[in-house]
Figure (tube, rainbow, N blue to C red):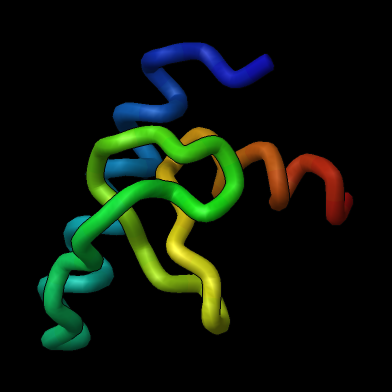
Length: 60
């Protein structure tokens, strides 16, 4: 389970990374949970911070 503080921190880092690299924010809903929030594109999938963290935890 990902807590809100971790989700907020990852959200901030995703926004910063997108801003630094010049990527435009992704519109729509998360492809994994259908949640609305700041999304980042990982491969061909739109993911929110919580799903990004869940995926990273599952991969380790």
